[in-house]
Each structure stands twice: as C-alpha cells, then as structure tokens.
Length: 177
Image 1 (cartoon, rainbow, N blue to C red):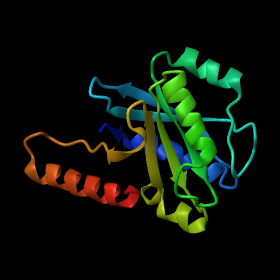
Image 2: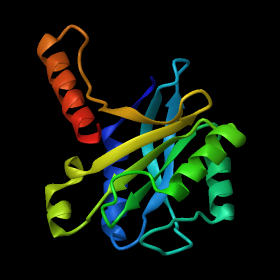
Image 3: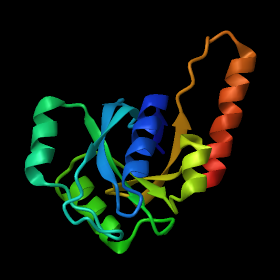
C-alpha cells in the first residue's frame, strides 16, 4: 500500500493554520509529487478559506481552489482538514467526498485529517503533537488508511540516522493505526 511522506515545512504549515482557526475545520491543499509507486511526497501545505466556517464541515471556495490549481499546476496532491472536536476518523461526508474525488473524478489525492482538540496544550506542544490520519479511496480496496512518514534528511550511509528515521516512522504509524 502507498504511503505519505511529509516534509517538516508541510507539518509546520498545517499546524500554523490550525492554531489560527482552532474552532472550525481548518482546511487547505497539499503540494508535492506522487511517484509511480503511488506514494505521496508532501512538501508544503497552503491554507484555504472554509466557506462553511463550521466545526464539523469544510467547503472550499471554488474560485480560490481554481486559483491554487493555476498557481501550482500539477503540484496539488491532496487536501487536509482538521476535526476540532477530536473525531479521530473520516466522517461519512469525508468518505463520500473521498469516493467522489478519488473514484468518480479520478483525482489521486491523499486526504489528511488532523484530530483535535486544539487547546493551549496542543499549541504549546507544537506541530509534533498533531495526530494526523491519511486516507485514499482505491477502486479495488475502498477507503484505506495510509502510513505517514516524516521526511528526515539523512545520509544514506549513516546507520544511526536511518535507525532514528525508522523508529520515528514506527511511532507515527502506531499513532494512526
């Protein structure tokens, strides 16, 4: 199964967005590339306005999304949104949107959901405290949870750095699995 690899900058972008609007579903696009194996490499996140201004629903302004698609051609590889109430999985609305976009429209986006609550403790602990779940809706398997790995710059020959990256990845996977 494919995985999601996130650069530190993308984590910081999402954290900053959530801290600015903790009471509603913060939302935005994910920029990066998808490789031939189907893995998503997220380098940045860009906040978009939630026109619903709701704690349980988000909706992009179509013009703003179109502007982002023109500004970042072939770089949008997914979206993120928060669940400020702490609901730690995709809602029925989320699942329907994933099915529609991934299957019907054949847009291969990854979907990240960041689970709340987003209180002062969350803000003090920083972006490493984010509980993120990644999804994709596949034609053959339906809705699947994707493993998330943080991109850690390492030298290929440095065993200790590789071990640290592996340990961190396993820790992240336990949090979402």
